[in-house]
Amino acid sequence: MGFGYLQTTFGVLQLVGGPIFGRFADQFGTRAALILSCASGSAFFLLMSISTSIPLLFLSRLPAVFMHGLPGAQKVIIDLTTPSQRADALGKLGLCFGIGIIVGSALGGVLSTKFGTFFPIYVALVGNLINTMIAMVWIPLQAKPKSDYCVMEHSTSQSGSVFSIREILRLMKFPGVMEVFIVKVFAGFPVGLFLIMFSIISMDFFGLEAVESGYLMSYFGVLQMVVQCLVIGKLTNHCTEMTLLRLSIFIFAGVGLGMALMRTVWHYCIVAVPMVFAFSILGTITDSILTKAVPSSDTGAMLGICASVQPLTWTVGPTIGGILYKQFGVSSFGYLQLIVNIGLFVYLLKSKIPLRETKTQ
Image (cartoon, rainbow, N blue to C red):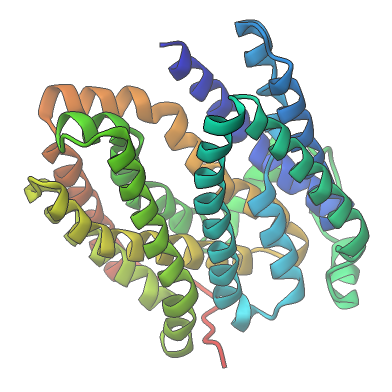
């Protein structure tokens, strides 16, 4: 129960902090935002390393408001690439983060076993301090082209407070933004609920031990790296972003059917292939579409809004996922995924969402 409250606290802080972090990046620059993110990570692990009580452990979560390394790195990529290169570049960035998660998880397990529970925390603290120095030395002060900064001077994003809710909501009024964001939120939500409950499902439904569950998550991570590195770039060379968005939703519907019918861990290993493919395409393409739909001076805020989708799932997921699993079983996640994505696919076919369509040359 306490662990659940701790996870929910972290999710709420990330949910609130994402858009604020994005606004900060737009107003003060990408380098300042990355330094803030890495410094917040350092404070997070420092507080955790001295947490000897439950209140201190909850207090250590406060810096999570500004721990948004992925949106910060995405902001650098967007500033340094042309719109036609964006989806491919964002996919490769996702590969780097995927490698970090897999290596970090394995290394954390080894270090905690050999040197104690707090040792991985010390390593993470040192790593974040190094990242802070890298951001200060190597990230350019102005990553955007000069022409973009001229536009920024006249942009409303530069007016008002970093904490302005009105300025954040203003972005949703740009053509196509609200529609694509709704698709981003709901398309993977049922699968997200399943993944939140996976630690329980893996033991109760699949009958796996903790070590076997770890192997399965590593398999999931390897699939993601393959898709991010080898598949997304090739697809963006030949297909428009709307075509890829519809494709990901169609595959997600098929994933829902597969989840509803799966009975063994081997079935899940098969379903995981299209699941990872759809997740990777959906995340990369929607981020690319949404950042193109707003002025260049607002891309940070938009990335922050996009980054709030996962924390939203973390916040409400344990409650909703627990109810679904206890009342209706594992298949309920699959049927919900199928129904939601069939509805979204029909919506995308019928709607004419105004997008800046580009293909990588």
